[in-house]
Length: 196
Image (cartoon, rainbow, N blue to C red; front, top):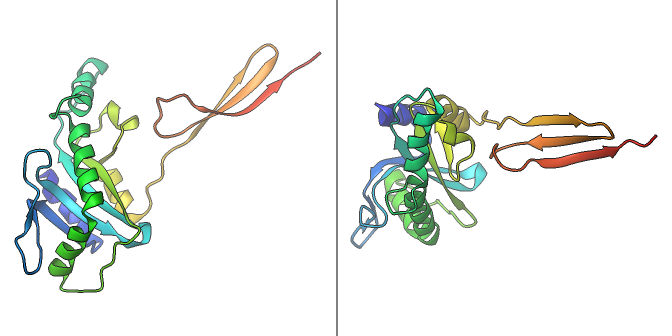
């Protein structure tokens, strides 16, 4: 269901994509398998030419969580240091695809029937699409989108929220800008010291 909903969003905007990718099609040779140990199947691979990006999408169906104790389970699943951690798996996939962009070009040329595709200067970005919001999505290594925010990303209307924190103390005022990832040390924007 999550994969189908993600596909509908991509189709609606006529994005060039491949779903459930186990190999990259290649002309005149064997396809390049990616569903091997260390990589694995890609739920979606799509290109956004005006951003010069190739997106790898991994869809994760998460249990609805309502408290911090249970959010820890999601956090652990993403951040495990072994090969089962979602972030570690994504890191390997992003690295492999960045090195093998020529194979991605060939795959999409075959898929689209067009020889005009050029990905020179493109970057590969790994993202997750989830069914239910989780606390980790606000501080993750790889961006995590719900279906709603993924649609905004595809529409070009997604913007991270930014917050300004004003701290007034006895003899000074500090202003901090908080932006994604939200649970990092915020950037000090202004520091005013009051003198009598």
